[in-house]
Amino acid sequence: MKYRLLFPALLSAFVLIGQTTQSTIDQIYQEALSSSPVYPNLEYLCKKIGNRLSGSPAAAAAVAYTRQLMIDYGFDTVFLQPVMVPHWERGNKEIVRITQSNAGQMDLKALALGNSIGTGPNGIRAQVIEVSGMDEVEKQKDKLKGKIVFFNGPMEPANYHTFQAYGNAVIQRAYGASEAAKYGALAVIIRSMTQALDDEPHTGSLRYKPNMPQIPAVAISTRDADRLSQQLKHTKPVEIYIETHCRMLEPVQSYNVIGQLNGSEHPDSYLSVGGHLDSWDVGEGAHDDGAGCMQGIEALRLLRTLGLAPRHTIRAVMWINEENGGAGGTAYAQQALQNGEKHVAAIESDRGGFLPIGFTSTGTDEQKARLAAWREYFLPWGLHSFDLPGGGADIGPLAQQGTFLIGLLPDGQRYFRYHHTAADVFETVDRRELELGAASMAALLYLIDQESW
Ligand SMILES: [Zn+2]
Image (cartoon, rainbow, N blue to C red; front, side, top):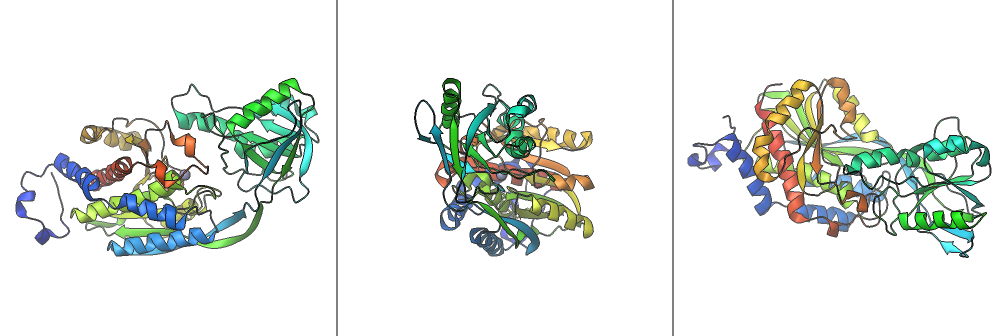
């Protein structure tokens, strides 16, 4: 089996005797579980910098922090890649209030959706009409004019694959506003994207369709969505008052943050690994996606610390603006194409810092067969799922050059309790689970790097 050493003199010779691929993989995990700084690094990002929506001062601070961290680790090259990002601000706290119902007045726990326009200081007061999903808008189109449309389609609770359930329901959040506006609605309320029944509203981005009126949009907690739905069954009409102060400002100069270990044999072929540096403006962006960023940096640190000098150039990338635009991922792929940087593979961690159970992927049959063949190296470390399709939002644009796209797959049962909420804080991340995810990506980078592509 092949091995390569960055500082041969620093390692005792007998370490190399009998070095198998499995023992190298095991060393990566052992190093991560015994002396990794990934957890305190995430703590710094969450507690000292905090949430970091694109265009915010905190996002700029996160750019500076991760750049310096990679310089301190002695990566060969660390640089910023300019990206213009949208700048949306929430403004003062939202009000979403049932003003007329059998149960009297009731304030609902709400967050404006990212990219939404605000109602202005006078708010919007109107009768509410409930729909079970996008399909029902068309059926009820004659009743929507002048109303607030309440999208109450749940994330299917019985679906084990939580990201699939999310994918099926999130269309309401993304396009519900434009769909309702088409028929004269004044605003929309969305049931939060979670299978949990609790009081936590989940924000997230919407996309206004071109040539359609833009109307305000908010998400309410699932418990409040059930309450509102109950009221609508017993009271006619139910009226709601919505007041939001969010607005879209001028675009801001921001950056993807990139650190790399130069390849010894194929310096012009790249493997990229990382997550997105921006987060929503509530909570601390711990699972989404501080964890993925810190794991990406840690993957390179692990390889370097263990003297596993890469044959291909390996990059840790902190993509900016995944949450409300995707500008970082788009710019990265464009630059790669322009600079003739052949990206062999890219690995993204954007499903939270939970216990890793495998990898998802998108690529050719041959690429996927190679990934599946490595499963045996990971079984001792608890990873077993290597066949599901996937990748990541930020690496997706690299598909145009045939890059093998891979997503770290952690256990997904708890992710949507925290996703896009005030509850996505550092304390909800487990140290060992975070370390195992970083080690998994480092181990996979090592395996990819050993082969010719
Ligand atoms: Zn994310």
